[in-house]
Length: 331
Ligand SMILES: CC(C)(COP(=O)(O)OP(=O)(O)OC[C@H]1O[C@@H](n2cnc3c(N)ncnc32)[C@H](O)[C@@H]1OP(=O)(O)O)[C@@H](O)C(=O)NCCC(=O)NCCS
Image 1 (cartoon, helix red, strand yellow):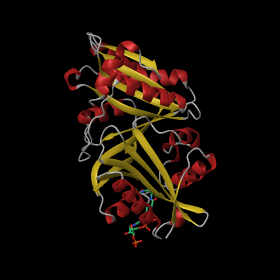
Image 2: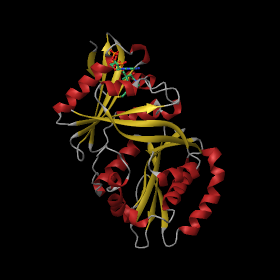
Image 3: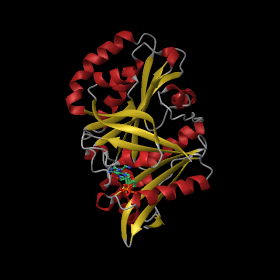
Image 4: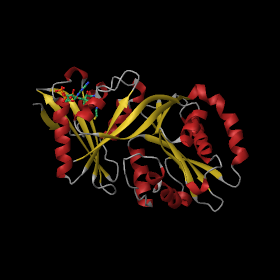
């Protein structure tokens, strides 16, 4: 049986050892879809406000053979835990994954959690054994998302024509874009819109509840992102009355700006049909491109059944890279 050891995330050597196994265990994926050490290290060492991260490794002597990340939401979804189980390819089919899973399920129960959610990435080079493992352990599929990426330099020539389409259908709506900190005049309605995300995006059987994005929580999340070196370009669609009714954001690490990631994109149902999704996405991509010309790739993921979002991504030049299968199990 491997020995389970907690990672002291303030110790860079321990964290780096954990990261190297986490990365090596995903070698079936396109390398630039996996956050680099420069981008991920600081994020792993700082709990997002409202969440507790626990990192541990399974050791064979002095060798770290497998790793886990537990993410416990503290304010919302109090019976859920998000978890990663990853085993180094050199140490598979020896029970390491089982030991890691047993430990994370034990910790989850101890913290009053009733359900574990975990992700398997299915790429053209396979899924690293993830689905067979998850299903052997009693996990069932809850949702499926397509992971997509766009090559910014190749896609940029498409943008002017899309911007013309957007201008023709915006009407009295406006698009506002900011970096890192939401302007005070929008922060209430920005938080209110964000608080509806989980109930508005297709999430299959994931059954996750909304997070209440108070102004304090929006500000705390913004401050943490700046602290860990993330630059955020947020674009909001604003209704004639001044309320934010749509939003999207793209984040890039200032320590390694080669690849950026989209957070959530959504337009409130009562304001759909004005191309606001496309408008906000174009604006945030423009802002990213202007500030970080060295960023060449943006990734996003969304439910396969989300036809409108898929159409926007396709228009912007996003291409399918892999499938993210979300599994869950009731403990
Ligand atoms: C999935 C993963 C964690 C399994 O780690 P592991 O140490 O090889 O797992 P175990 O040795 O404990 O396997 C337990 C059981 O899972 C099933 N299993 C694991 N890998 C499998 C594979 N490649 N094919 C078929 N069944 C598999 C088997 O039933 C296995 O029991 P057995 O070896 O007695 O037949 C590892 O392959 C990995 O890191 N993959 C990439 C990341 C990932 O997808 N993680 C899954 C999150 S749920």
